[in-house]
Amino acid sequence: MKDNNLKNEMLIAIIRNEDIGFENKPFEARDTRYASRAIVKNSKGEIAIFNKRLKNEYKLPGGGIEENEDKIEALKREILEETGCTIEVLQFLGITIEEKSNTNFKQISYIYECKVLENTNTLHLTTKEKEEDSHLLWVIPTKAYNLVKDCFKDLKGSKYDDLYKSLFMVKRDEKILEYYLKK
Image (cartoon, rainbow, N blue to C red; front, side):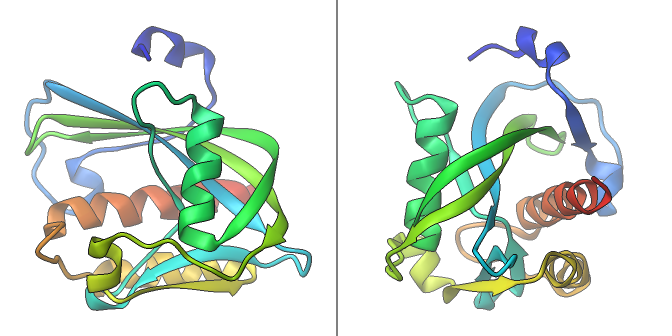
């Protein structure tokens, strides 16, 4: 994947150090990671929120696009792992860009709105997610936004993700939900 197509994508937000309470530094993206994320709706109009209790973190489901995987394949894999649901993609919402200048790392996330086709009620969590005491919640979109927004001030790092990285994740998902609620 290349960044040169990003000009044609709908930009939801760019998150930088200043957005999470850190001093701005010059940014040179040495590494770039691509990810797919979603607002996943069930038949009751609730959306999936992934909670890592150990970190007091609430986030949208989704994750990195692996080598030889396209955006939608990655999305469906990540959603199945983190929610136990198979999904239908309803629409592409846009992208978010995280410019982590402390680590010169850029993450570009492709954001989708999806609906649940089947809920297996079985999560496929990684060791990291299990150790961070992760679980899934289904809540109305405004409650999801408030959970994500409110956890920012009490967020904790873990042995897997320092506070800096967690603050970026939460701020990104806050911006995505804010955008979604305004649509």
